[in-house]
Image (cartoon, rainbow, N blue to C red; front, side):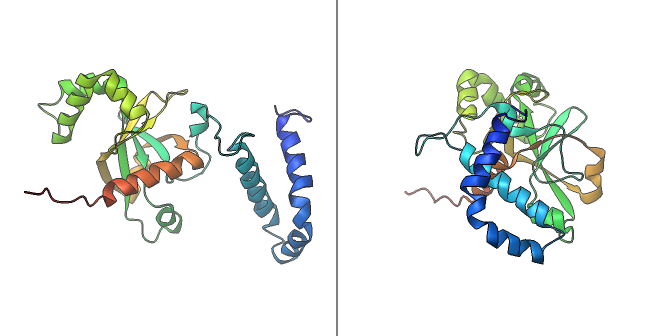
Length: 223
């Protein structure tokens, strides 16, 4: 795959001759204006175009199936805590869902928004703690009783409250529980270990569903 004449090399060559070469004069002008950044700019553009091709197969309107490993970046690449990072402390996992612009700018960031990741295999132990735990854990009892039907619904993201995370490497079959949120001070996140990040295509979907979940207005019941 990564060989000199491998799949990736073939795709890059195809991209250059069929796409980039068509706008090469415009890119040469950009190079004179952004000499220090042109390599990074062209790298991002190349990756975006390659992703555009790999996102769908040869059939128009048909999407390729993804492997669970494509959802995660293990270990995280960004040097600092960022949106989509999966962090862990005392055996509990969370995902950071602050707006990326707040984290990058830093000025508007006083707290990190952590949303709990619940492993399916730990639902039973959570139920055992219901009497002494916080009220939201009562809901996990019904999840545990429904068993496979609940798992199937969560896996297909039919439940607005949850988002499914597939099993891969250190990640177990899990759900992000959008109702289980913690706010911790900016410096408090440093006590958490970064174990993985959600890759961009999947992170967009998680953020969209998280936003939509709290944007629901609903309507009153009629008499």
